[in-house]
Image (cartoon, rainbow, N blue to C red; front, side, top):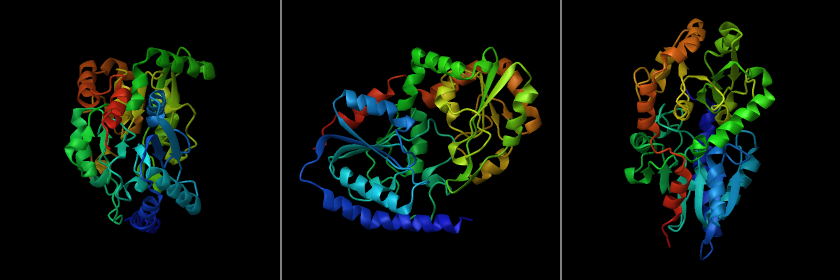
Length: 374
């Protein structure tokens, strides 16, 4: 059952999308758009999201005027959130393009100008757990608006992922293109990887010479009611592994967990880790690019798969051991190097990440902005 608070929130979003926001857009339109204005927008952060950092730099290098418009709706008040949306609609009405990387109601709230291109970068790689219209947890049946209207381009990490995004967003296949995921470009830059390792060991010198585990689970539930499963075993993992090991714990930001013991961004920890432990996180797709072992720790796999389900077969498609009992987690981590399925990871990467090759950002901007729409 959905909480009353969430249902009310969906009705408010629907009302805004149908009335106030489209009116603001209509009144803000000038005769011609600004051909150099590109907006980067997000409702889950107050600074540039990782998914947009390289996009921003590339746009600026090509001479576009980049306007960043971010607001964390989970922490700002209703008045502040409304002011932000109104400000966005005014800019949107005259922009050449808008890039988003998550659900973003304002961009879908009106009939946009044909000259404006809307690009959905999406914030995760691959296609793992069901999302969008394929998941009640993502888009409530009480929300009567649209989350995909006006999309001109959705970028994904491989051809294999196109079908999942078409289903999740209820869009035509030609809008979803396997151009890669921009933020993965840095993973192919060895100077970046070396910098990540150097900075980490400067801050955490006691990790030098140790085998390092990165424990990074996702959350269950939705943004208003989320939790994790199995974290009590993660808290004891380092002790059970012994002195040769160190464990980095990175709980999902929505969980506000006191277990997190490192404030470095998760993406910058992947070059450091020897083994990843996660559950239903799309992090496995990015980590696979490093060709290192990981362990799936999912005590609730049976109940979770019945409730949300996946786009792949979690038990057969994932080239990693699946652990459902907390008492067996430490041994699975210790054995992970010997049991590492190199060929399986190669196949997995080719299937789900083949468009990520270090040049995704360039392809995305070329595809989004190379053709005149006016």
